[in-house]
Image (cartoon, rainbow, N blue to C red):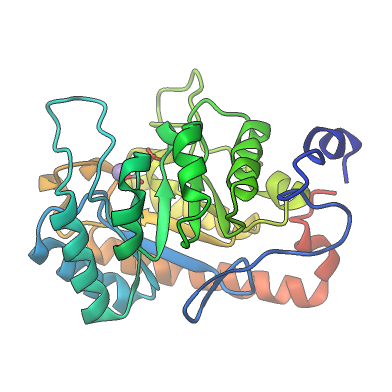
Length: 293
Ligand code: PEP
Ligand code: MN
């Protein structure tokens, strides 16, 4: 362990990894996030209609995703953009779960909505804009659902782990960290995927770490290659946007994969995941810490 990281992060005692090779696994039914499996969460940015979501749910399930994402409450930068269907969107998500068996991940933006969203969601997503909404984190402490905590777009890893510690202190230890790209001077991509965040977080924390290549890239052509990078650096899974007709999506169409592209991305990951399994078998110590110590 790099001594600097140890000093920087060990004060977050509920989420940091203090020497022992212990790892947390977040369980949702049969699904284990943070264990041996590479878990893919996929679906549209926003729930737009029953037809859109059910078709997407079936397509991503068939391609190997085991959780369905879709926002019913959307944090849009513009007041003129589609804001989400609210409770009607949650009902559509529930129907998709009934039809496909996929577990549901959806965003919560306000502490007032925690109760209702927890009735429908299997995992509560905290978006990049809310990572430091401490009232929300406090309310999620006792929501009874795991939390997918996205890194703030201008947050350091220390601040991300500080928010995780706040959640854990409030009573919720089922936390999944998500690297989704940060703001830098670079404009060729929507955000800069901080790929080193994965091995750093896996070294200093016992929590599962997933990568969102969609919001990092901002364009769909880069999503598969960033997904591959995530698999190779030891991420526990992905959060990927998929839409039946991205050109007509009500949000984040440019970065959403079509069904065919998502299927190809999943197939394309196979050899990398097989290699990872093999490396884990041959060099368990190195792979366990993402090769970072
Ligand atoms: C999303 O997942 O659609 C989303 C709004 O993500 P982020 O908070 O990372 O921008
Ligand atoms: Mn989105």
